[in-house]
Image 1 (tube, rainbow, N blue to C red):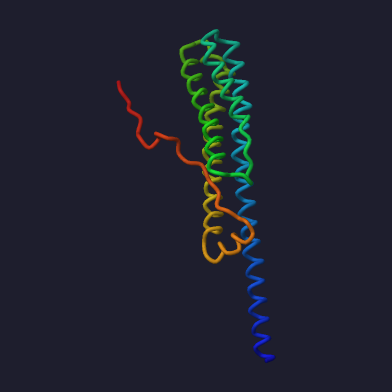
Image 2 (cartoon, rainbow, N blue to C red):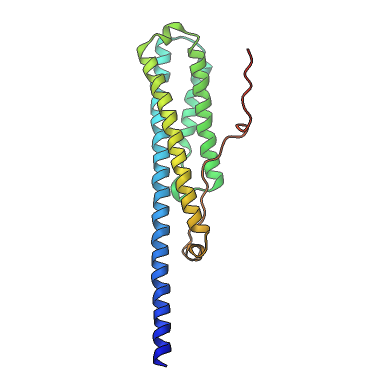
Length: 193
């Protein structure tokens, strides 16, 4: 009886140690997802902050399409009003956040196209600097989103793989949604001359 009792205690102890290790791994991956999400939000915030400067520079130099400026301002407002945190990364919330950010990106693209029609604006040093910064920020956003998707992938593999999925299910860890390509981006744009 003693021997079987010791074996049972050893097995129970091993299971407890495994459970603790699995829980710590899940927490570590979850925190990595949160950190990556915060990086994404920081890049979007940096872009949003730059948009105000860009709009004011364009306003000051060019007196053109008010609708374009209004669209940019409205898209910026909408993009900053969509609040989502790393604990609530449902597919719907991520899609809503991504849609608002893509609307801002689209309105910025239209602003830059319209601004190209104003030679005095293109010659303005501040506009040129802001345009370069905006391009750099867009690259930073892409890099940050890719890092977030990598963190989501690592986390989801841990949450969904056996035997970690047992501990994940018990402790309430669920798979999370990452960024996806926008609708229609699978088709190459048509270029005509």
